[in-house]
Amino acid sequence: MNPVETLRRISGSSSGRLPSFTEAHALKALELIGGGAGIGRQQLSRELGLGEGTVRTLLSRMNAVGLLETSRSGTTLTLRGRGLLKRFGELIPAGEFPETDSTVGPRNYAILVRGAGDSVNKGIEQRDEALIAGADGATTLIHDGDGLVMPGVEVEVDSTTAKHIIDAFKPCRGDVVIIGSARDSLDAEIGAKSAALKLLERMHDS
Image (cartoon, rainbow, N blue to C red; front, side):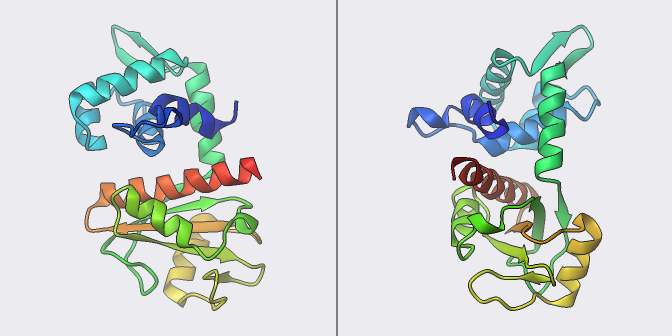
């Protein structure tokens, strides 16, 4: 099973019903639990912006697909869970991003999607996924071998944005960078994750 399909099973979004949490929330939960700090349900609720009942369901589904194990010391990732987290770290490395001339909000979160350039049209799909997830928008950039360009307009981005991306991700030809933007850091992150996961899904299906 591909990594995105595992998150889709957790979120229940394949059932056609509107899920109470998304694949992006499941990925962030995986990252938080994998951080090794023994995070509890209440803290997870705060970090994910979800109610405790919803977090309970999320953890139950993660456990059902073999990603979690619980002991006296708390909830940790299984070998499968650690492997999935590592895989996403390789596929879509990410991190907070400063506000620049190319971003559309004060709080920003950037994700690199390796080799996804051919699956991007004009960046509208990524923007829409970020908006649906609660962000204010998203900026999509593609490395064309010479530099970073915005799809559809094919102009290089401003030097400040480019420097931050190159320093953080060292992108190669065909790589895509999605920057989710919002007034709130969590909304920016979930927006970027949602857009990146949908792009990974498109790559897998093509």
